[in-house]
Image (cartoon, rainbow, N blue to C red):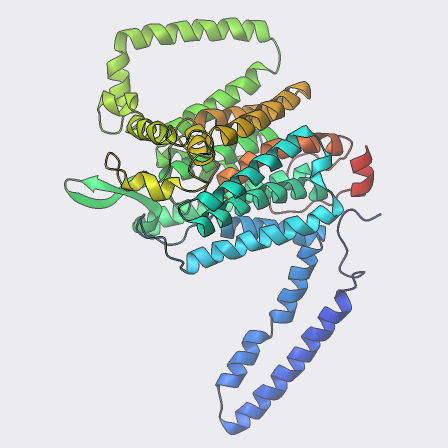
Length: 485
């Protein structure tokens, strides 16, 4: 029996697509032969360019109807196109260029695929958590109408709900195992592209900063992720997915082949919070694997020693951890405390509903106490508070708490481990807001993993066996049967 999706040789679209390819090929050959006799060169070029269009139409249609294999490879490509930034421009430049058009096209593809997936499975019937998450997105979309730039904010918030639906659809129609493979594969490619940009194009691949009066690329990697912090966080999430969910043994070379570019990006980005949050997530998973009492006692001992060391050599350690050699860089969160103070001051003027989704980038950089790089609150919770007020933050935190409670009840400690990463990393950077990114897609994967646990528990398409990056693994049972399990 065939799982979700359609097979090419049985689809209604197969015959029309094959016929279309044949017709266009015949017309192209006729135009080329006629143009050759008349000395015209433009018509053949146009026809040759149009030749693959029916094939692209066929592939796109197969993806749109969720043919599993096509949907799998299309997901990797769409996520890469959506998340990669392949040009450099000033922060204050908000014009629409080819890069933006490419991202908008990817968002449109994600939205279309998500809507077609809803025909197969309506997620709001899953649990109260799903309804709350959709309430949060719907509320943020509503707040975009009062934003400084309503059109931009609307597109950004729609892209996030589309991303949430897309990850959910991937898990329900392709299985958790294939979804994990998609995310790991996309992260692997994005990290390889980032390393190439870091080496070959420093203007794109490295963070620029003021050094001796000159604004030049530094040693911090930004790659194709846009910022060094985003690069480090995405690489950290990729590592956690590979270690916790791939099922690959550390004895296999493939494990290290996948980890290597992610580890390089994490270290080269010099993102300390990502390293610390990743370590906390791994530590939680390790502690919850058993022998909790011994590990807890050992943890208390290590914590006590850490407090003792910090009390004795705290200034020296923080100076060593800072990039500038100043203790103030650590204690101020690299200037974040100043941003947070302004955000709270402005929020108090609109405490209930905030300033609207996406407004931070149009307000904070122009505040007299801040600077143009302060395009958001540099804190996930404050960013939501600033955009959606107390109402938005309450819905978000309630959704998050209920999701974590369900994960705890299901003993989904690996999922909680990645959630811990986001909870800690969110103290210094936002993960919700702006156009959907790799980091936000993986964040939305957390509630989707919890919601998909029931449907995938009885399927061999879960993560019991090792993930095969870039290779689709067919699901053995129909989706309908799995959903009823």
